[in-house]
Structure formats: structure tokens, C-alpha cells
Length: 301
Image (cartoon, rainbow, N blue to C red; front, side):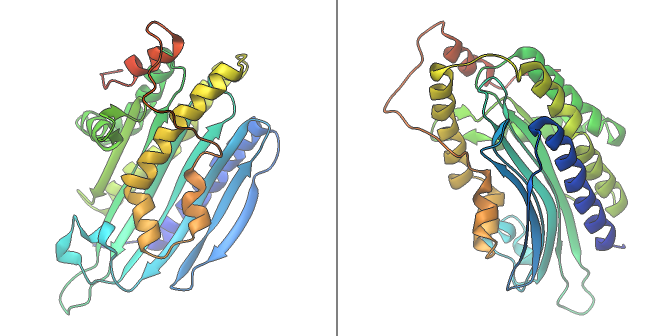
């Protein structure tokens, strides 16, 4: 089995450039370009915007890093690989628009290789990723469009993938201590290495290639809706849930911090402002209460 990390590198860097170019047409100004190196091995390119015309904060990050021993967040679900040197690369993005009627969105595609250390063993690879949508003032048609695009990305690789990855997303992006979902979901997958490298890589590319199609039409439909202090207050409150999930549950955040990654890039996923209120509940029948109905997992397509 051939693991072609050269092609994965070329794809991920190209994907980052294409997504940033698409987002810059929305933002109206260029994203900052920040190249960094990691003392333990590797580095990356952080493309970000902060205080922009449209995005209050956004980051589209490429990283390609190496290590001598798998960190706990990576080896916990593959204990037989503990102690192996490793190589990881991928693109991860989080976009926090200023307008509360435009959802926050997250997307990630990645490849991981655990290197063989014993003669006769082979390198072990897997792909992971997905995308999910976190609205504040939800529109059913936006969720339907997002889930339909996710389904279309996976359709060439088997009819069973979308239902499975959709459920995986619903279960993964769930705040157990709140007993509520983070948003309206999407798709999530990890540890994908079957049936072979080429097929797993092609499926991962399809997910990455469908991101702009999934998100930009929603931006176009909602970006000019007027909002005021009430909507911004609720957006900040719900962004608090985003912070809680990323710091408590997110495997990517934990892996980055445990592996000695670049903290500024890892925490770029956080919203620029968030708020918490004690035991707050929206008024019944209010637009804010509508969100709590929308984030109950369901079959959108």
C-alpha cells in the first residue's frame, strides 16, 4: 500500500488557497498570511481575518507537523499505535461572521500517518474531517442546503456514508454537560482508511472541495439582514457554547495542544467575543427560542 504524502500536501495547500480566495470575495479585503515553523518538526500557514468587514474573525489553517510519539488524543482510540512517530497534515477552518443571521461554520480535512518502528510492520494512515453549521437565528432552508451538499460530497463513495457520517457529527458535536447540540450538524468522520489510500483520499478531497458550495450560498442569502443589539447579545451568548465545546471536547484542539502545536493557530477557532449568563432561558415563542428547536438532531435531507 502506497501512502502518498506528497499529493496530500499539494492538495491541502491548494485547498487552503482556493477557500481563502473564495472567502476574500465575501470579505472584500485580503486575509493575513502567517507562516510558522514548529521546533519539534514541521509548520504551517495560518490565513486569517480579524475585525473584517464581514468576518469578525476567521481562520483557514494549513499545518504539516511531525512528532516522535503519538500524543494521548491520537493514541487513545488506537492503543496499538502508541509510541510510534507520526506525521499529520490538513486544513481546518472556523468562520465567525459579524452578522448574527449568518451562521458560524467549521470544516476540517486531514491525514494522519503513524510510522512503523518494528521491522516487518507498515506505516498506518487514516483520514478524517467533516463540516458543520452553527446558526444563531436558523433558517430551515439553510440547513437543508448544507446537509444536501454534504450528502452530494459523499454520494460517489457509497450511499451508506452520509447517514453514518451525519449521525457521527450529531453525536460528536454534542455538549454533554448542556445536553444540547452545538448547531444543526453536518458530517464528521475519522479513522477512515478503507478500502485503500486512493479511495479514502478521494472521499476526503470531495468533502473539502464541497465546502464553498455548502457555505457561500447561505452567506449570500443572509448577509444583508438587518440586526441590532438584541441579536448581537444572543450571538455572544451562543458563542459561549462554541468555546465550551472546543476547550472541553474537541479532539483537534486537544491534539494540537498536546502535540506542542502553535497555540495562536489552535485557538484561532475561538470567537473574538463570547458571553455567559446564569441560568438564562429564551422567552417562549421568541426568535431565540427557535434555535433550540432547530438544533435538535433530525433528518434534514
